[in-house]
Amino acid sequence: MEKNTEATRASPERKTLVSIQIEKELDVFEGNAGWEHRVFVKLYVAARTSGLLAEISDRDWKTLCTLATFMDEDGVCYPSQAHLAHALQIHRATANERIQSLAGFRFKGRPVLLVSKRRSQGKRFAANLYTILPVSELKIFDRKQETD
Image (cartoon, rainbow, N blue to C red):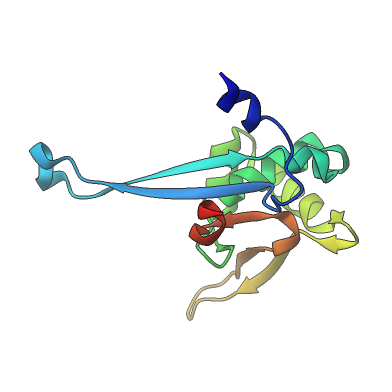
């Protein structure tokens, strides 16, 4: 029980607020199915104690967490607005509004999300490329901090 109590205390040394962990799993009896990737989102007490949860709106937080499930180790992802809308169970236009809101949000004076356009050759419209910036404290593949 002491271990669980210890886990709920904020640690001044812990800088991570939220992290994403990717796990690969192979069922040895169903090996022909290939590797399965599973994504876990970890929320640390520091997300509260740093003030992030108090400052970010519920809507922006949910949008940020959803985007984080698409990001790579550099914080970059490019889900379509239709994919985001489906994941959030909202209309595509609402997904666009949420992205714009999150892109305008600042934590400690810095943006948490950068939105840039990328145009594929021969395509009429540009697609959005999203970069979840370090100030958000969302990380993926951060093995060094996991061992601290």
